[in-house]
Length: 286
Picture (cartoon, rainbow, N blue to C red):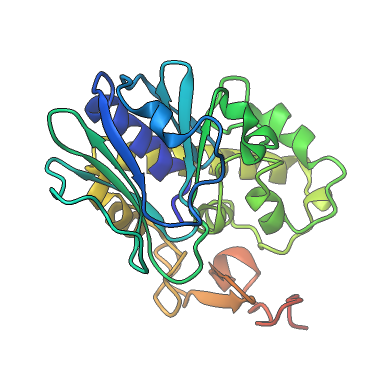
């Protein structure tokens, strides 16, 4: 799933390649993709693109007083093309969800792999009209998101810290991959209760969060949209690397699987050398 660093890089990419261009036409190619009907997609035709904004994992492309807002979900992506096919897209079972063509040539496709079609597109007058944006917590890259602000979010949180970091209503933009990376950098078990973190642990976790995201954003900056997925994977230390050696201590990276996701961690770095039980209600083995 594209998370904050990749979506931030896509925002930069669109500011460079889309801003100032005029929309020729927008085609929805998947029935499930469009979540709004007023204003219609056709209202974007002939409009000039302005700057692109990011809200957590959402991209908001501006066209005057209208915004095309998309959430790429787990398997979605934005594919820029300098030359689009001459024939309009046909709705079907392929990965194409939406195509935006620009006057003078080029544009982009929104695509989604797999059978679970969750990619969403909204055309709104204000991005805050999108329910997912309206419920977002603070952005960790925003000014004012300091250690004290982070500590305040954890106060009274009785959930496991992995789930707290992934909760978009608590902190915007962090998903499964970067929560694994942050916890590994902080040398913290993903199942430690947030409310039981000591002051030093909160500080360590905050610093790991800021450093991990800042480094990922910097790695992604200037990378072409089509190469961002590969760039993300190359920079991950533990996520998606089950069975590989930990780059810090050399221990074998392990995994806990859930119904629709999995997390990765290093036992030596994060759980005192003890493996986590690989079941839905995992806890440290005794």
